[in-house]
Amino acid sequence: MFISIKDAMKQGSGKVAVRGWIYRFRNSNKMAFLVLRDASDIIQCVVDREKIGEDVWKSVEKLLIESSVEIEGAIHEDKRAPTGYEIKVSNLNVVQFAEVFPITKDQSVEFLLDKRHLWIRSRKITAIMKIRSTVFSAIDDFFRSRGFYEVAPPILTPSSCEGGATLFEVKYFDDVAYLTQSWQLYAEAMIFSLEKIYCNSPCFRAEKSKTSRHLAEFYMAEMEVAWARLNDAVDYAEDLICFIVSRVLEKNEEELKILNRDIEKLKKIKKPFKRMTYTEVLEELKKDNIEIEWGKDLRTIEEDELMKKFDKPVIVTNYPKDIMAFYKPRDSKDPKTALCFDMLAPEGYGEIVGGSERDTNIEELKKSIKHKGEKQENYEWYLDTRRFGSVPHSGFGMGVERVVSWICGLDNIKDAIPFPRTMLRKNP
Ligand code: 4AD
Ligand code: MG
Image (cartoon, rainbow, N blue to C red):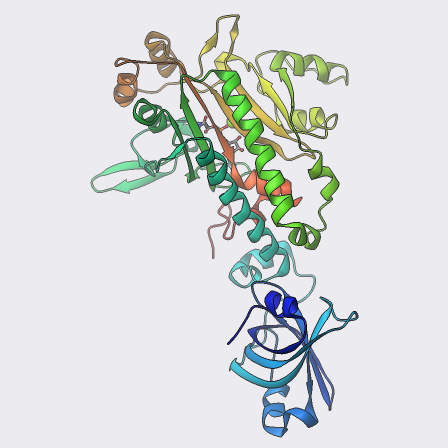
């Protein structure tokens, strides 16, 4: 019976049968050293020509990297081996002889993206995908353990949530539809039955920016809660981020090591996070001679400048009302601003969460929809949610790849998703 490499190493001695792909290969006339890879780990395997016999040796000599093989042998500890164990091979069966693998050392980023379907086998991407999987399960566990229901939003939508500029239009029978930018408007309708809901769903934005933080297709973990105010949503966001980071630290120490991630930085991610208003951010930046006109959105460089001062996420509230999405309500205590927040990650990873209270004033909503150049008729169904038992409610969306990118310490968000889509890439 085949077991995983990790289980074989746990067993530590005696006979084992493992299978996987050739990760590294080196042979002489008498011995072959191959490093075998499976989903769990890698292990060095030694083939002795004399012991294995000429028949098997012939096929061993033809092995190239990424060939798939089944191996039987005796495992033992060996401090010099890459993962501390070695298998002395007693039998080897080649499942498929691989052709010459196109990926060799020191390839360009673009080449690796062209060969993404093969590059995902690398230790780096494998480690990231394991961490990503932990993040997904942490999101579920966090919300479910707090009494939230999971709700699947529609992906095809008739109108925009976050502004028309980044909508993807698709042919919809004889009409057009748009790929969802956020589940939010639907979530606002669902809280009247389920009160506390969440999702982790693909979102689409035709982002024209070629930054290391933007994808055209990404996952957003969103939540919406009836009766909740801005501070409640911020508290949930803070708790969620702490929960995710601690879960990754608990489950993925090995993967973080493979990625050379400084774990000490992640260990600091504990409540409370600094909370400041947009206006306070401008004052803070002014100390560093960065002048921003009140009312202008914070740009990446300004967010990065601010975050140089912090080693934990920062929550920025009360952005100017006029530049915010139509559903963000005016703060009656500071009417030029909205009851909204962004959470900025440390180490230059930018905005990881965006959220707000939702406007329940139907006349204000109508004005904002018009102000954004949208047609009210497209939002009549949404306005109905304010006509039948309207209650205060709040929610947020967390960019899953942004969080994975930060936790893994990646240079580019593209590595946080198996097959990235950007303005310049939809292949493979
Ligand atoms: O700030 P955003 O645009 O907020 C919303 O869409 C709200 N409707 C969410 C809500 O309140 N339910 O997006 C939320 C988060 C951002 O903070 C960012 O982390 C991520 O989604 N995000 C992206 N991630 C990768 N690529 C993109 N193009 C992204 N756009 C937003
Ligand atoms: Mg935002």
